[in-house]
Length: 254
Image (cartoon, rainbow, N blue to C red):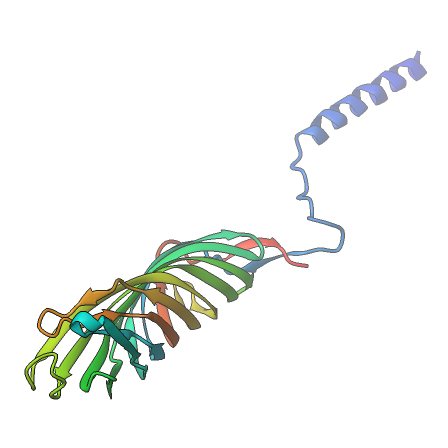
C-alpha cells in the first residue's frame, strides 16, 4: 500500500512539473549557431539636403547661314566650359536589411558655366548654362554606416545662347540676339554616403548628363541654330538630414 501511495505521488509531481515547465518563457533563438545579432544603421526614410561642387561641360552647336537662292552653308561652334554647381536634393530610401538600399531622388543645380567664342558667320556667340535638374533611382550596397551607390534617370537643363553680329551681313553690325535653350536627356553616376549621426549623412557623388534640344531660327539674322548635345560632368559634396527614427536596426551580421 505504501509503495502504491509513493508511486502515485511521484506521478502527480511529474505532471505538475511538466505543466509548470510549459509556462516558462522560451529562450530566444539565434540566427545560426555562432552568429550573434548586432546593430547596424537604418537607411530607410525621407531626406532633404544641399550640395555644392564643380562641373565641366561640352557642346557643339551648328549654324546654318541663309544664302538666298544659293541655299545655306553651315558651320560648327565648339564650346567647352567649367563652373560652380550648387543646389539641393530630396529623396526617399528603402532599406532591405542587412545590406541593400533602393531609393528615389530629385535635385536642382544652379550652374555658372559661361563660354564666348567666334563662329564661321563672323559673329560672337556666348553660351551660358543656368541650371541642371534630375529625377533618378538609386541602388545602394550598405556596410553599416557606409553606403556605396549607383544612380540614373532623367535630366533636363536650361541655358542661354547669345549672338552678337560683327558685320557679317546677315544682320546690322552690333545686333544682339538671345535665345533660351531647354534640353532634356538622361543622367547616370555613382557615389559613397556615410551616416555621421542618427539623422545626418554626408556624401561624395559624380554625375554625367547628356542632353539635347530643338533647333531654332534667330529672328533678325535668319540663322538656324541646332543646339547640339550637351555633355555635363559634375562632382559634388552633399549633406542630408534624414527624417524619422534614427535608431539602428538589430539583425544578424556575418
